[in-house]
Length: 142
Length: 179
Image 1: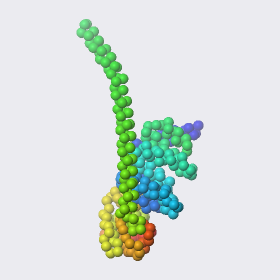
Image 2: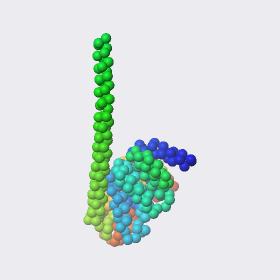
Image 3: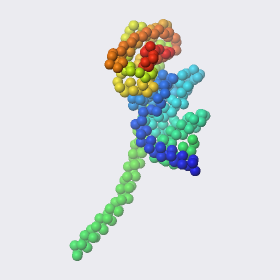
Image 4: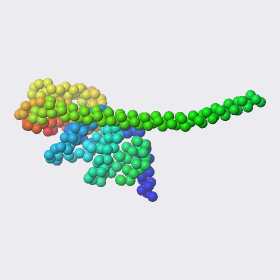
């Protein structure tokens, strides 16, 4: 019973949050350890989402092709970078791609807190699309 | 009486016509919704293509204009909360003017939110170099200016240098460098 109540509370929360998402600045306020990630935040905070996504896409593309990604400072925050791409895409009204990026994290081999955050974001995207059933299904994964 | 009867039949006709028009209106609305959905998907596809082109251009730019063995990128970030308001940053590389940037309110907000500004990207030879940074701003009502010089070594890999402007009052050094 409490699970059902919690789920619906989440859904009500999403309902109220979803209209604000498009105009919301990126959620990340923490300092980026990778300078290019920080540059993407800098662009996104000014509403330059195209520059932010393109910068971060390029950075992630290069990161995944490194011989030893652990030497790159981005490896500390690679999940956050993936989420941020999704967030920026959402703000740039590209919910299809945003959903795919976050779903990739959700289905990947990641820790529980990260998976929960991804599930929450996927639910938020579904809510924006007006698909409450899928939003509940995403919340159930938390 | 015939006038009232005529009025009644006219009303009935009007209601019947309105009822008949309802499904048509609903159909039109449905079609337009589908059209909007299609348009939204098309716009998203275009944005995806633009992003792919932009990313490719960035990679090409980096590869052709700033090869890794000569590339130098300088970044500016803010740290701490204090009275110092950053107005401008001036950079000199090996004594030559490299960049001068005056900050807008939006840019300052972005920096305060944890963003990092890439202020300069260029090419330098491998070896010893120096960068001179001047931070211009205001602390309360008084003008503020501090200049700092940093020596660094450029190797074969791209060089990234972060200039941290520390606004915390406890900090004696407002300009700090991080490699």
